[in-house]
Image (cartoon, rainbow, N blue to C red; front, side, top):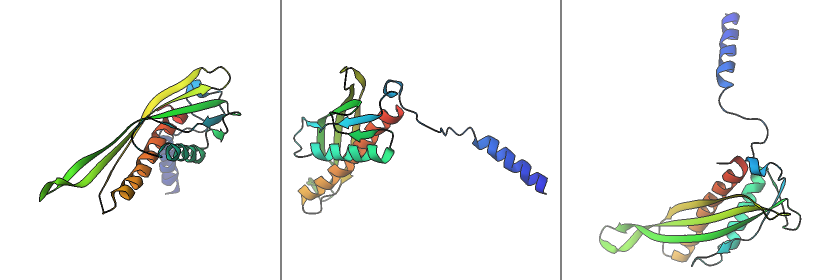
Length: 169
């Protein structure tokens, strides 16, 4: 029986060894030489107030959790990331069944463009866009409800940007 168990263990090990796990860094090729990254505050081209700092803080926290790059001030980083919030859309998704003018569910969409520049040469190493979307329900204080939804959408934007910069997808 022990020979059968040993054979089964060997078979499972061989099968699972090709599951796509990598050890070590998997940075995109243009970012291979970047070890430290500075993230500037977002530029806000939308109607949504005070969201630029929230987006930048959320992105910094996401990169710190990942650990691929060390986040530093812009004077010391190997590269500098600049991001622009280009779209903040708040729309009605579902109406109240008894009153089509009243909304029972909203959707919030944030769209961001970003680029990573080499601090010394100014060359653009990577660029792209990210989108964060969430829904929320009005509970009486629409401003508070929207602010909570902005935090969720900001986390989704940060995850998308970090995935593109650290893993290339």
